[in-house]
Length: 271
Length: 282
Image 1: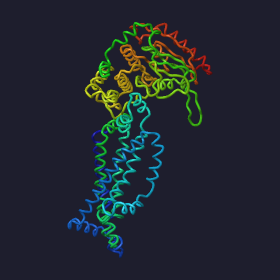
Image 2: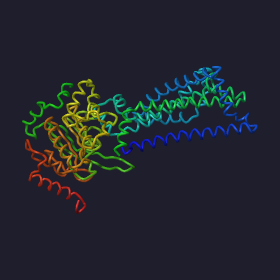
Image 3: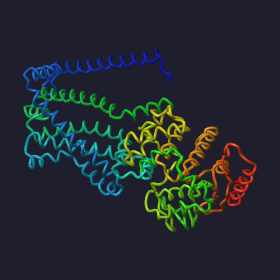
Image 4: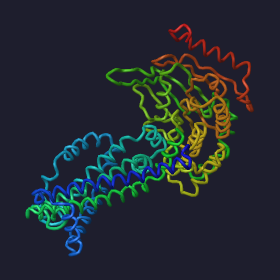
């Protein structure tokens, strides 16, 4: 409340300076990299920012990158949607029952802690090579993030609210929908956010091990050809994609929990 | 059912009928018969209640007073069906209580308002859970919100309200589905003295108007004397009933104005509690 006009103005200009400083730092690092690549014999290993930029431009100009990028996006989103639906539903169902939570959650945790990449050869056996195994890996990696975040939100529902639900005669479904899920909304938002990023990682993993399309496949293909420029260029494409993903997510998450955000903001103002 | 809820804030015939009966001839609402309850935590067993027998009649306002931690809240949780007695019988409305008691409204220190819902949506929640249609439940919620004096705050969120206002929202939410019985666990202890008096007066009026049975746990002896027909004094843990006192409440009495007789009841309770205590000045 004490943020008057001039103070806020100064805060904004500081933020602007930070952006400029960040850009300068990035340019400096890239310049250093470029000069190292130019003045030594290591360009074969570390490539150079200019070569990578040229590679990306070539990919875009020839249209080579689009089918792969679209495959990665589709794989990520398909895996994520499966992970989001099953993760939220299972976490709410299991978290609502103390017995189910006690019996099943440890088992799911064991499955979570196992490296998912081990699944890749099995997936090729089950569903063949291509996008299907990558979708499944995206789903599996994303699922656990959604599941465990939502589960901790469902567990954290206050007992006062659960007592209220009981006295009002709310059944398990009404308790879940009107009490548990809204209370867990911030956890669900975090779970979906992390789930999407992990689904992306799972998709790349699947493409690298069991697919013949996608950015992950491009990386493996370039690496087998010892083409460090192409590997790093593919990495840059991934980086750009995750940046878009993450900034889009933040906006989506803010929209997902408006009431919570309002009450928290007000609470913050009062305390 | 819906019709009953629609009329939630208008006096029905029931309290008038009850009014004509002598208080001791009214039907029993809650009956504790030799009820015991204990808890195990960190490997230690604590006996909260021991052989407690208590009858609360329909339309009666009963206050429970006694030292902190003497199991009074446990008694309310039992009456709400949130806990089961270890031993003894607990009946509500003549039938054994086997699960959460949906005939009661429970108001605790923690008002348990849902922070993501507006005042209106919070108050309409009980009717929503019971499947009342949207226009009807909002109508009923608006009416009771106006009754507790929060007409202009329907769209506010709980975090935007003062403690007293939150308490009144919780009271409105409790009354909107017209429970037969109110269980109140120190509902006003966190409020400032002035706000508390206003809400106490409001509560007493609503209780008479709606013919509610009330079980109130309080540490405030003045509150107990001002509001109740009967005061039950509990011992230290494990809680036993030390004495049951009748407080005459003539119709039309202004609870904000204490009477000379109140002082005697006050001293009597104080003596009972002091006798029960080890501490010389407790």
